[in-house]
Image 1 (cartoon, rainbow, N blue to C red):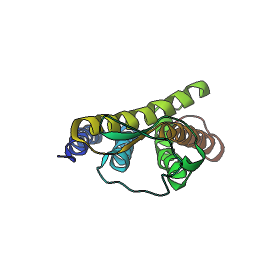
Image 2 (cartoon, one colour; image 1 turned 120 degrees about the vertical axis):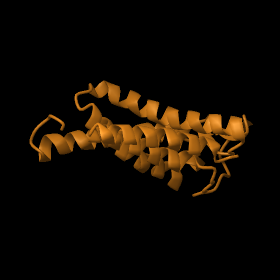
Image 3 (cartoon, rainbow, N blue to C red; image 1 turned 135 degrees about the horizontal axis):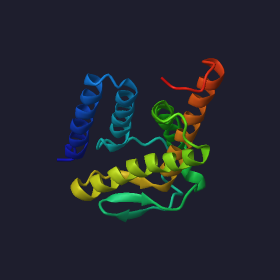
Amino acid sequence: MRWIPYVGVTAILVGLVGHTWRRQQYASMSWWLGWWLLATLTWTPITVTTGSVAGITTHWWANGVWVVRPLQKASIDASFWFNIVMTLPQGWLWYRRWPRLNRLIWPLLGVVTGGALETGQTLGNWLVGLGLWVDINDIITNALGVVLGYGLAKIWQDKWRGDSSCS
C-alpha cells in the first residue's frame, strides 16, 4: 500500500519519458528522468537517517513528521547537504529546457522543485501513511541546489561551450 504513490508517479513519468523519446525531445526527456530520480529519492517509503533527530523541533501531522522551524542547528547534517546535491542535476535540466530565464526566477524554480517534492511527501503521508519527514529545510536546500545547478549549467554553456544558446 505504501508503494502506491511512488508506483503511480513512476507510471506517469515513464509515459512522459516515452512520449518525449518518440518525439526526439531529448532535453524534455532528461527533464522527466530528473523528476523520476527525485521522486525515487524522496517518495519511496524507505526511511534513511543520516544524523540525530535530537534537538530538532518536530510535529506529528497528517501521518508524518513535520519540521517547520528552518535551519535549526541540529538539522544541518548530512541530509541537509545531500538535499542540495540531489537537486543540482534538476537545476541543470531546468537550464537545458529554459536557458534564457531571468536570474530572478531561479530561486522560484528551486522553491517550486522543493515544494513539489515536499507536497508529494505530504500527500503520501496523508493518503497511505508513508511516515516521511516533511521539512522546511528540504525546500530551502532543494531550492539552493536548483539555483546552483542552473547557474553551473549557464556558466558551462557560456564559458566552456562558447555560446549562450542551448541545443
